[in-house]
Image 1 (spheres, rainbow, N blue to C red):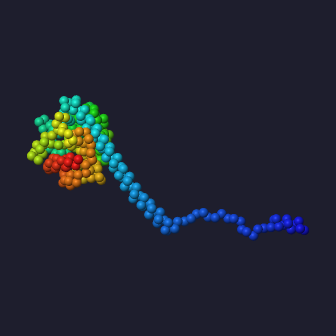
Image 2: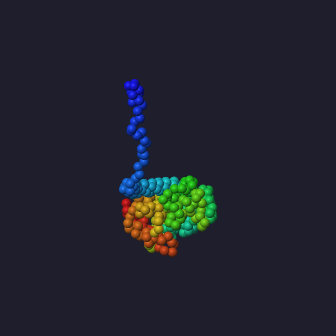
Amino acid sequence: MNMFMRQSTCFKRSNRRPLEPQNQSHAFTLTELVVVIATIAVLTALVLPALAGAANKGGRAQCANNLRRISVASMIYATEYRDWLPVNLVHSGSSMNHLNGMHYSAFVVMSGMPNTFVPTNANPTIYGLTDLGLVYYAGLAGNGSFFFCPDQWGAVTGGGADVYSPLLTADAGGRVRSSYFFNPRTIDPTNGNVLRLYQKTGDLPPHKLFVVDYFSPGPYGHYRERGWNVLFTDGSVQFSQDNQANNLIQTYFIDETTQSHILGDQICNYLELDH
């Protein structure tokens, strides 16, 4: 009897309920959701401007490198052409290197064949090569990629590489326009003397504007930063954010029927004085 009782005690059913798996899920409360969303919003506000700033500086740095390459290529060109810098052939004959409008200095191909690829051995006369186009013709520019600022797109204000892809392909008007004003200074634009100021390497003074980012009233390459990369005659490149130049640019029009060469010259003066 006692043995049976001891055995039954061993097999006695427990009154405690077996352990049940507990639900581990935990729903967010409204307060917690608001905190998470607010945190994400704050982090986004902090990170995005930094990323945008880094992207802008990256494009600006590549643009500055383009200008340095233009400087080197132009000097090599001059050694091969009796010290002559690339000439502007928009107006041929006795009018060579006459810039009746500052915008003419941005052209690489002025009057070529529409929608046609321009080979490096292209006849300058047939294809209307001018200024940097002659650097291209001399085999000093590869496919001409460094004629275009990476922050410049489209053909509204300055030339973007996307318009002339594959490089160099003329647009519907038979033209290719770079992202830069190349050697744009003239002798005395105010009094109508628009002959190019620097025609040979011996004409180059120290630390004067030689090439500059294309500028216009509308969006331009570095308009978010309100500034322009400037290549100087000594080969140095600096970023200019002159307020007077920026104000004057708002009245600048890319149109030979206006006094754009006078306004352009004044803007260049401000960009030079900024350094």
